[in-house]
Image (tube, rainbow, N blue to C red; front, side, top):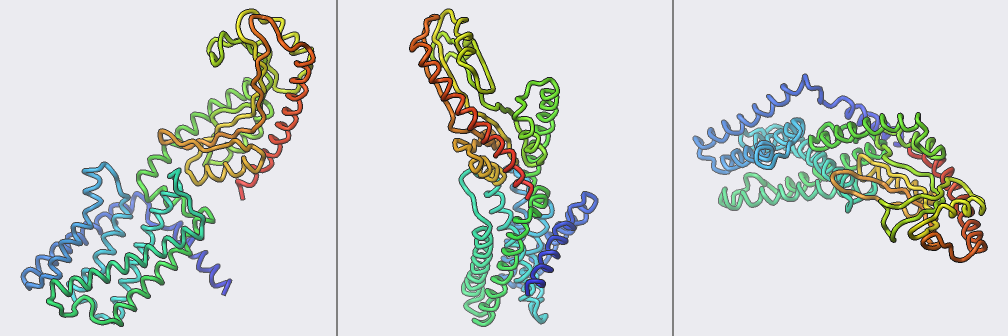
Length: 419
């Protein structure tokens, strides 16, 4: 049983890798979509001649649904991938042609049509929930919940279809069972719909867990493809600048192996980094960073004598002693990837880390709790004396030791991103 299931998953992976996304094949699938849409109109006109008003309504309503991607693109400037459009038209045509052309008389046509249409509906549900999970900061589903949503969504759509068949019989066929011929027919349709939802839910969730669905998603969703292209352009530009900065020694040595590990993954890129530092700064007033003057700055433990020597350069303004946490900004391609990076950061001891989403960018700010912001004096005069400064330096050095351990832990834990 287990071996059989593994074979199914393997076949699913092969299917994903061979879906018809080749641009050379696009014209064929678009042409097939247009042909089926034309057939819906022709079949509707033919049923007008037959005065079969149930299928007249079904044909023209189906044509309207098939044209929704075109309407959305024209009026909402939202593009639907041509393969998604083909699947939509195909699912609609399966059922409408079954009744309008009496294809339901073919043995098992109805069940096959229900199964294929429900597989397509489940695939749409997979795209919807995966889109929300990847890019929405408010929605996050674990794998079992994602599979459950796909299954329930597919069953719900199957139920809506059966209700529509019942309503059409009541209002368009005078109560005569035409679309919904019996309770047995209705229940077997729902069973087939449920089976399709379960299969797509399990296989889709497994594909996502194994990282196989992301590439398919980025190809089938035009808006995601645009976002992906923009992400790659920004990533390439940033990494080019980073390489130059590392070459010139402008990146903290402790951060180099960390940013290199992160940037080795195509789903992320770092935009800024600092390994943490001890600072003595003079500023005209609190919060006036632009006119602040650094008297001393160290990315390591310091001696009391170094701090005292730095304070000799004070003249006018407030004197502050600071310990600044290591900070790292990582841009992620999706909310899902950002959540993974956040989990690694928090596991490594960077408890103040968070996700920030703005202007279409998803950024993980990696930050620890180590921090000191304390005043030392004003206008060149230092308060508290040497003993107070020695106390601050001792605490700051302990913080820097903890910071170094956390940075090493983060570097090690980043290996989990590759698993």
